[in-house]
Image (tube, rainbow, N blue to C red; front, side):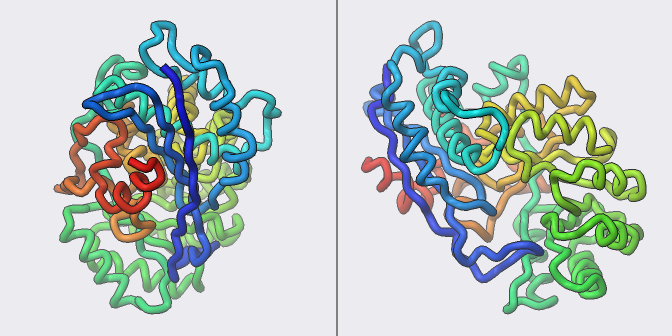
Length: 390
C-alpha cells in the first residue's frame, strides 16, 4: 500500500463581495489529489482535499516541502499497524518533520489540505462515509444522522442594497434554512443596524440570525455593537475582535449578554487551548468555530474538540467554519452543534453534495464513501477529476 503521486493546483474564488475586513476579488485556495495504489470498485483510490475560503493558496509550501516529504517517505511508515490502511497520524508526523513548533500560520492550511485528502482516502478504503469512520474511531461509534446547518451570507455587495439582502435571506428560508448569518462591522453602526433589521424582517426572531464582524472591530467598537444589538436577541456575535486578543475577548464576554462565537482564525491545538483557557468565553452559551481545513486538517480539529472536553466544553458548543463537506462529516461523526455552509458563494467549493436536502434547518448525511466530493458534480468535474486525471 502506497501513495503513488500527489497533485496540487490553485483555484480562484474571485468575487465582488466583501466582508468587514477583506474582499474576495483575488482570493485563491489550494486543491490536492493523493493518488494511491489501492483499488476499490475497479478504480484506484484517490483522496481529495482543499483549503478554506478567506485565505490564500499554499502551492509553494505544498510543492517545496510537504509533497516531497510524503513521496520520499518509506511506504510502510505511512500505514497503520495492520498494513490495511493509511494512518493519518503517521502521515501528519511525516508532513511536520523538520518543522519548528509555533508559528501556526499558512503552513497549517497546506497540511490541512493533505490531511483532509488522507482522511478521504482512508474512508474510501474502508468503503464508508467519513463521518462513520470518525464516529468509530473517536466517538464510540455514535453519530448524528442530521446536522443543524446555517448558510454563511449577507456579504457587503455594491449591487445588492437592503432589498438584495432581504431577497438573499428569503432565498435561504425558501431553501429550508431556519438560522442564517450576515456580515457586519464594515459599515457605520447605524447602517449595519438597518441591515440587521432588514434581515430580521425575513428571519423572524433574533435566534434565527447570527452576525459576523470578521474581527474588524476593536474592543470599544465591539462593545458599542454588542450594546446596540442587545435588544435583537441574536443567535451570536461572531469574530467581534482580533482572534488572538484573548484578554479583549474576556472583557467583551464579561460585558455582553449575547452569545459570542470565534475560533476560525486560530490554526493549531495550542492556540485553541489558549482561547478556551484565557478568552473568558462562556461554556453555556458561546460558540467555538475552528475551521478543519485551516487548523492542520481534521486530525488537529478532532484533537481540539477532545481538548475542549477536558476543559469543560461540550462538543455541542463547536460548529465548524468553512462551509464545506468536511465540516459536515466532522459535525456528524463527533456530534457537534452544527456546521456552516455556503450555498451561494465560494463555488464550486462551498456547500454540500448535489443531492443534499435542507429541511427545518437540518441536513442529512451522505452515504458516498469518504468526503463524498464526487457527489458535488461541478466541483468534481471541473476541478478534482481533471487534477487527478481520472
